[in-house]
Amino acid sequence: MEQELNKQTQKRYLLNPKTYRLSFPFYVAFEACIDIYGNEKRELFNTFLDNQNDLDSRKIKELPILTQHNLTETMIDGLKSLNLPFRDATYLKNEPKVKALLKYVNEESEVKHLSMLKSLRILPSYQDFINDYAGNNNIGEVLELAIALFINETSDYEYALIETVFKRLVTKEKEEQMNKSDLKFKTYRFDITFQVLLEVLLELHGDQRKRIDLLKALDGKVTLESLNKYPEYSTSEFVELILDQLKDEGTSANEFSFVMNDSRVNLLKHFVQKKLKTKSSRGRKNLKLSPEYDEYIKAFSNNVGDAIEYALAFYIGKLENEDFDIIQSLFEQVALSKFERKN
Image (cartoon, rainbow, N blue to C red; front, top):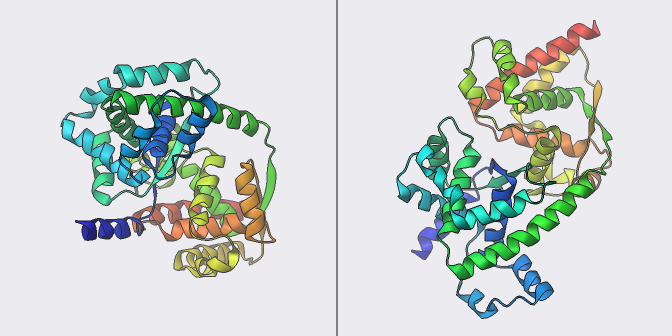
């Protein structure tokens, strides 16, 4: 049994992380569960220290210990076992325990409308279940139902822990959002290939209401349904997402020299050089990133644009062929439009 679990763990870490968008209350509830059932329990123990909480701390040792990926799969197993279609499972969000958490967030007007991104390495069978179960709904909503069911079925003691940590995390997130509002735009310079690539990816992951324009640009090569599978991100969210994937693998440009020789990167570079007749043209992009990402970018290379270029190269190198084909088609159109404007 233990050997089988080790094989699954190794298999999981070969997977690319999949990103899911959760509404703020469920994101925080999930983070609270991760903290409580994880190894460190940092927020949980800080809560006890700060509040001298009257909950019996000795019982914590009896809780199961799960990684966030195992916890996610446990939650999804619970949802599977209900054997209910999506529309019939939505009642889970109106059960008393979850409803109390939602009510608490609704009183925090500054944060209740946020949505948050969560990247998870879960096994393909769980990814497939989420995609199939969602139907025309947001895939993140499937996770929300699984989280709701898990919380509803916890013991009173476990729920009291979740509620306590949940409230602590809501307060912390509220403070972080206030700090983010003070951030200023910074200008990053890129090789023109990566400027075009970033522009294309931001369109592909932009407002879903505008995907019909992409459909026209792709001239029937894909369906609107296939375009709508791409999660919707703001500019800052997407850039921070690809930087997160890079951060998981290393901290400096020296560790990633291979990504710039990727065949897909070379294909896009060759197209730009051929159409724009230049090898050194550079573009710029104004971005508002959280301080931790600015620090990573500065440490990555002397040229502050490098980290984002490498992150883009790393990102497209991991894509499925059908996804890259869509990006390549859009890339060529955007590059050609720049060539026409230049001339």
